[in-house]
Image (cartoon, rainbow, N blue to C red; front, top):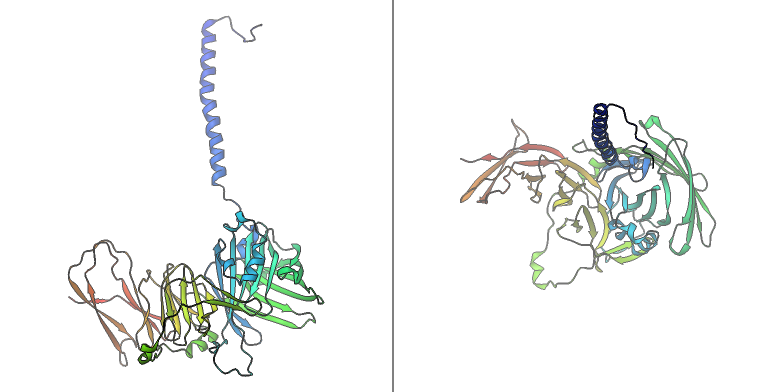
Amino acid sequence: MADSTAATADPDLDRVAASRRRLAAAIVVPAVVVLGAGGIAWADLAPAPPVGGAAARYLPADGSAQLQLDADGGADVVESTRAVGPTLLLELPALAADHVWGQFDDDEVAGLRLWRRTVTPLDHEVPPDAGAEPDDTAAPDGQVSSLARLGPEGVGLLATTGTAGGLSFSPALPVLPADVAPGSHWEGEGEALPQGFATYRVEGSAAAADAAGEGCLAVTLDLELTPRDGDPVAVTQTDTWCPGRGVVASRATGPDGALVVDARLQPLPDDAEAPAALAALAAGLDLAPPAFAWNTAPGWTASELAFRIVDPLYGEGAYPGIADPLAVAAGGTVAVAAGSELLGYRPDPAGPVRAWVARPGGGIVALAAAGDLALVTTTERALVAYAPTGARLWRHALPEVAVADPVADGAGAVVVVTLPLLGPKRQHGAQRRREQHEAGGEGPGGDPHHRDRAQAGRPAGRPQPAGAHRIHDHLGQIEQGRPARDP
């Protein structure tokens, strides 16, 4: 075979050229490798598109709350729960859970991204015990929950429970498609109740709603529900969605064009002045502990509590997800902390019935009852108060996590103690600590309140108290002060 390599007549020039070719190879090959690796690294660093696409940015954060004001004068507290996995599915009534679960493959369930929206009326009264005499007064509505999935298709509604008009959708009813934008149009259809007892068809559209804020959308859903043995029912609902805030306005009309819903929503930030609707509810609550007839204790008998779910549409079912701690409020409401959720049960001779669920934000650290209130502290350094109906009253930001149970001081206030990690500190023997709280401020009329507490020595590395925080009038008004130390 002929040699195709060109050569010069000068051997020295050939050696120089060969050296240059080897040098070029030594430079180019590593450069290609580095550039290739850099390209791979750049691809790894590039943010992956969020699950749910553009729709994801419209969902509110986990634990966020809003006050919903209805045009008819009603008011509700709306809370949002964000979770990964099937837990929120398992909290549905059994029939609804089975219907919804069937649309997912087994390998999808563990990674489900779910969003629950609870609406708790402020004018709702706690139902009487089952043994009480009934009357003809219509009971006010209780808490209503909507569960949606954030998936590759966007936001899809899975179920609405807590009302006689509840529904469960398979496949999920499309609320916000993944590519939602002004001018978007979409549609969907499927079952609206188990076993095809009702079907749905929906057409949706989105338009810009800049008057409500930058990036907001007015989303209209024209929904047609058809019972198996009935005529179709048409409902039109227009919700204004804003990034990170969720729905900020809602308007719905029924089959005859009658107005069904007309509401505006506003955020409930930490330490904000209580809106009039919440202040009115809180004013009727009492921090006094319940009065138990302890003299009857010798006649008590032990029995296993059967916690239950009773849904107006889906009926009764057992609920096994009970965990410590729990607290009993003055009205008999049993509040149970389960991870990041607070569950409220009303007493019933057949076993406590779940009346509401709440999501204070973060994990629950401590739970206590103070009269009518259920109080929790969270890993997000917050103290959150709930009414007996499950409506959030206020959320107060703390400088550190409070691990001790909140307590009522008997003077119309709630006291919490925060315990940050201040580093190792060894103490020996007992230490007397006096904490002074000013109930009425300085000057005439001030009511200094002293509390002495004996503390045993703490081992090295234990957190040390950082301060006591006194919450006034159970409306979230706050005074803070570091404990005064005795010499």
